[in-house]
Every structure is written in C-alpha cells, then in structure tokens.
Length: 68
Image (cartoon, rainbow, N blue to C red; front, side, top):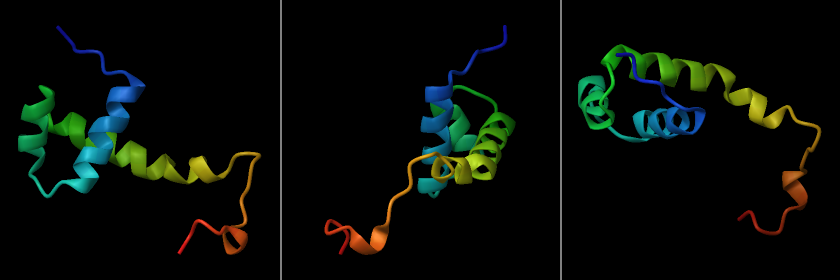
C-alpha cells in the first residue's frame, strides 16, 4: 500500500533533511518512507522555496528593529 504524505509532513521531512547531517536512508527509516521519497521531497521543497517570498506582502528588512 502506498503511504500518503501530507503537505505538512513533507515540509517537516524536507526541513529535517536539510538541517540534519544524516544519510537519506537514515531519514527515510525515521519517517518510514523510501529514501528516494526523501530526496524528491527535499528537491521539490528547495526548488519552490522562493515562492514563500513572492507573495503580495513584502517587508523591508533594513527598517526592522528585530533584526540584529
């Protein structure tokens, strides 16, 4: 049976794969999916990451007092 992975879970997997210094096989084992799925999720996440900043709201970082 094919496991359905939600968008929220894909985000979690992608961020984990980017952040952790582990082999795909180890990450896949932790999430109980195939290593190729981890690779595909990470690739898809990174190729679409720029869309986060293409929204109608834009911020001016130079005037943000919270950024040090």
